[in-house]
Image 1 (cartoon, rainbow, N blue to C red):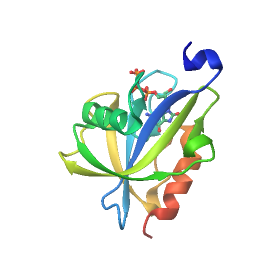
Image 2 (cartoon, rainbow, N blue to C red):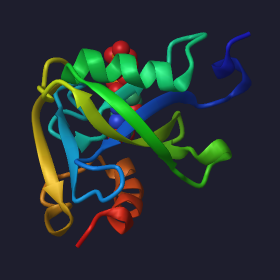
Image 3 (tube, protein in one colour):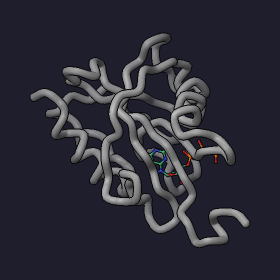
Length: 145
Ligand SMILES: Nc1nc2c([nH]c(=O)n2[C@H]2C[C@H](O)[C@@H](COP(=O)(O)OP(=O)(O)OP(=O)(O)O)O2)c(=O)[nH]1
């Protein structure tokens, strides 16, 4: 039986990529290209966890595919659901880790057509996907003024 047959949410992982894990001042946001209902919305890069995959492994795979980077993962940006997840509507749950690039320069290779580093004062200059707003607010608290 799959987790969806239990009525569980599909698992997604995302990264709050910053310039410096210890003293973050900018956060990387990515603009989605699909599906059409979400295209143009800005989000945390990442994606669905494959069956049998560890979360950290899934996130590293997604960031390699989507942005062409390797990362160091920091703490979980803790949300209100089980094990610190955040709800994405009724169907998905996302776990978001702080992350810093260790190799490569982020490029919108797959699933995105633009990337933007946002400082605290322009964190809301892009239209985030609605479900991401509580996560962005939590990230804002950690970003340096
Ligand atoms: N990656 C990501 N997905 C998000 C965010 N906010 C949000 O509502 N979502 C939604 C969009 C999708 O319905 C779902 C994640 O799916 P995805 O399309 O990113 O996953 P994926 O890269 O594995 O895509 P696919 O292979 O299934 O096409 O969560 C976010 O910040 N990051």
